[in-house]
Amino acid sequence: MGSRTMSGLLLGVAVVVLLLQSAQSVHIQYQGFQVQLDSVKKLNDLEGQQVPSPRLQAQSLQPSVCSDPALPADLQPVCTSQNAASIFKALKTIANDNCELCVNIACTGCL
Image (cartoon, rainbow, N blue to C red; front, side, top):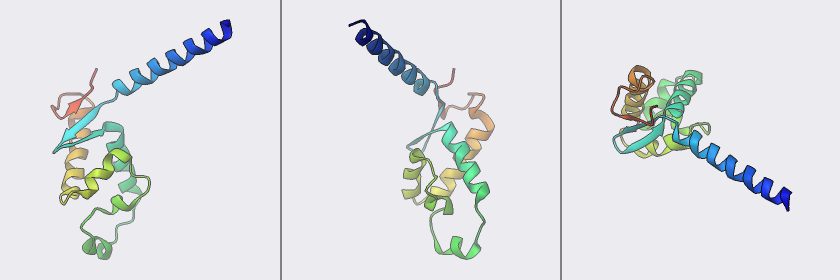
């Protein structure tokens, strides 16, 4: 009986810790999209790894990163927008300039 109580208590503690961790992440809200700051950082990394192909970029209306399976799930809806490239650019600007300091109104979840 004591072991069931202990495992139930540990499960409850794990849930609380997970909730606290997700509540402390910084989000960026821009043009109806809400993404995590960490996802925008991942976007920068993904774009840095890609080799630009002018021919493919001219054929596609979407940024090439939209076809990358490593693109974070919260950024994927941006790819459905006609303005995906400019939205990604704005998100990266917000994240790099002010979100880490939490002075931009687009950033939420700052401590």
